[in-house]
Image (cartoon, rainbow, N blue to C red; front, side, top):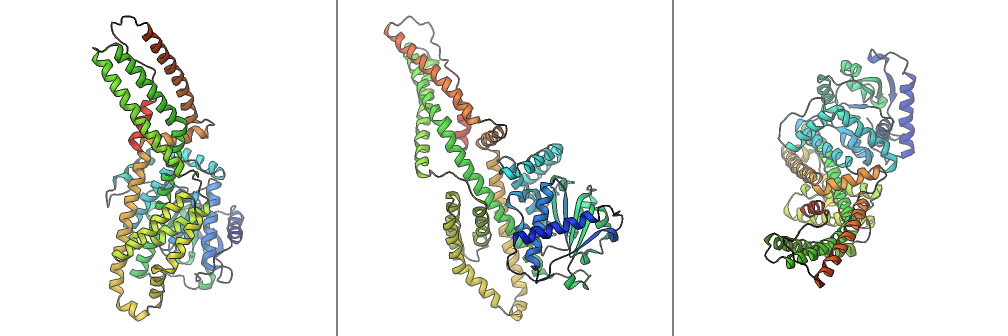
Length: 522
């Protein structure tokens, strides 16, 4: 294919994706029993936009398939284009797309990361324009609930070298695969996809059975500038490792973005919980502590009443401290978290470039760690200007200088150091793998927390037109009124006390179980 050109125009990408779909429509009435009856298309030349336009159009085509609830197999000859295709995908639809490199170790970690992304997004509200897509995906996973659970169990096990569940491709509307991975899925008797796009199709003509059986409608996209080269291109070890590293870095950027977003959204939810539920709950705990104290004073020999009074006092103190702490947090961060698409894309780009796990020495790691910490703070504050300043620091600093140095390296020097370069790439891949596994585990723990379960339940209620936290607040208002009434009655009784054989230590039920969930996971 042609070499990369300038960033593509989104309108040009959309037009090209539409042209490909039109070519499929023309061939829709033709039997696709053989590859020769498949539709054919042309990839853009260098002058027309080259690789960047190709990747943008492929991402646009994938997005259209998801919105139309069609399944797509995007077939590539090898791993070399996977990073660019993955990076071009719509951020909101990335979890719908399974991008698997050829190398098994890289495929396993990217699959685990994609499963974590999908699990996380399912529990959060989607933007309005994506609601239909996500509702369809939820219904799809309900149909394949057993496979979905098996995939989550495999993902959370973290066992290296273990085989992922058969038929796992069924969970994803879009598969983006090199030929080797597509063959592996075909051996699992996957049902045909609605559409297959094969890029650089001349290099895939030795896969006729795969092309025939993989989809109902096939579009072969050829690079006419290099049309005579129909044989597979041999990729050396360094190229292969570089492609795998680039794809892993894409996954790492997506995971860092997802984790930072989940943390920030949970913090925003926690602040709203405090406003609607936490504060009145602290008031209710204080009233109940006073009720328990009155009851204990009326029954000094009743050990149960004394224990209840001590517990109620301890709970009220804990609620008071939490209420004060959240009040401080509210004052420190009054701006609500609502990241724009540009902000998300910028943060992901930074995470890919400056991540500390790409450091070559401790000094480099310290510098990257500082930049990454600043980027996280800026993202949670919604400050796009600061993120761009951090990117500028990176480009003007060590990372940019190192990039320029590598570009000035002569081919002979690169050849002499090929083994050292391969070893360095392997070490960097291992570091990135470990970080992806670590952040995936952290994200899974967050998603399994009771606080996040409440957050997910609130989101589900919101999709049904209900406000769960407001409902809890309304219930607390009733409990507060009942507690105030009882406390007033006890205070009045003390003016003319009556003999008490055994004091009752029961008082109105509270949301203590829910409060404990919040405390356990704060």
